[in-house]
Amino acid sequence: MATGRRKGALSLLQSYGSDASDSDEDSGYTSEDEKKRKQEFNSPHETVKKRRKADEEEDMVVDGHQPQFPSPQSHICSSVSTSATAALETVTMRDEHLHSHEQSSHMDTTSPPPTETDLCAIPLPHELCVAKEIHEDNPSQHQGRIRSFAHERGNWASILYVPLHLGVYGASFASLLASLVATCQENDVKLTPSTQLHISLTRTLVLQLHWIEPLVATLRERLGKFLKFSMWLHGLSVYVNEEKTRTFLGLRVCHGRNELDDIVSQVNVCIDEYRLPPFYKDGSYHASVAWCTGDVSEALRRLLPALENICSQYFSVESDMRTFDIHSLIFKTGNRHHTVHLKTGN
Image (cartoon, rainbow, N blue to C red; front, side, top):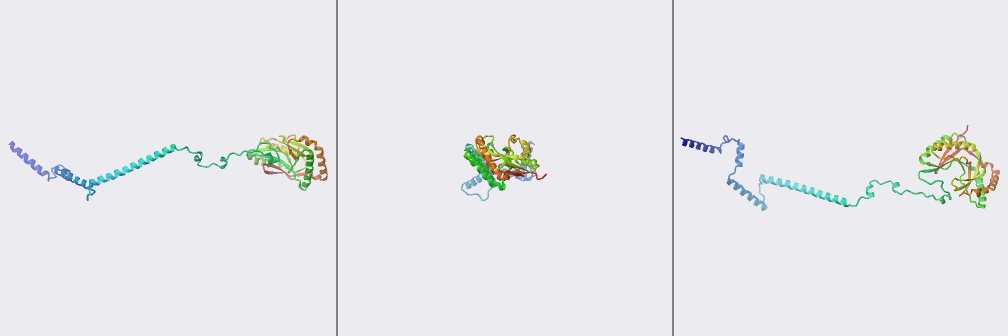
């Protein structure tokens, strides 16, 4: 009975083994999975056959012959090889770039430092690049006259004065001056005739540029209220500047001193706002007719009687030559002249 059971089990196993190769229902896989399993299963004979075929294909590649129909695996290997080559070239280019950058950095550190010219991307104005000029006063260019104060850029020498216009008496007055100068020269005092007659109403003032316009406006406003007046000159006097560098021979103002006092008082108020010195308190109004360098006041005063005699002779003939009508004042700053007009009528 046991023998019968073994035979029945053996026959069942044989029948299962024979049906396993043909049936897709009893294997436990779907038909597609079963086909895949069968394709992946290789017998020893098939393994040897595939290995031999791979060796033959390798021999053909070595001999320079490509197979007519490459397998999918060879296509995948070729793609992988191409990608690897591209990646290798990228890495090589990156290394070369880093190496060149390191070399340039090394060269920059060893190169000399940049100069001031290299650092100045924007050029400086010409005035800043040129050394500041130092002004040297040369008295020989100004008839031997010496400045009362040092020249400085931005400062303007200024003065307010009454201009004296000779008109038709210009030639007669020039003859008078020539006689006075000749008499002094005979006594070893060399004078130079003045080219422009005027009566100073201020000291020589030092103004900054931005002061000029407002000061001129103030002078015109205050002095424009004064009426026009007449004045005449009479008598000679000797004057010396504060620095004792120049001596003057001047005609004194006789008539018109009161009007000049009123004007000067207002001028002092105007310039006091700029902390400038007022006019001389004990100074006499005069018109300088001749001058010389240095202090020769003592020698010139000894000649005053002879000089006064010459003036009297001229004025006795031309009495109107010493009379002037004052219509305006002049405020001179540097080489610029600003006119201050006086009031007309009552």
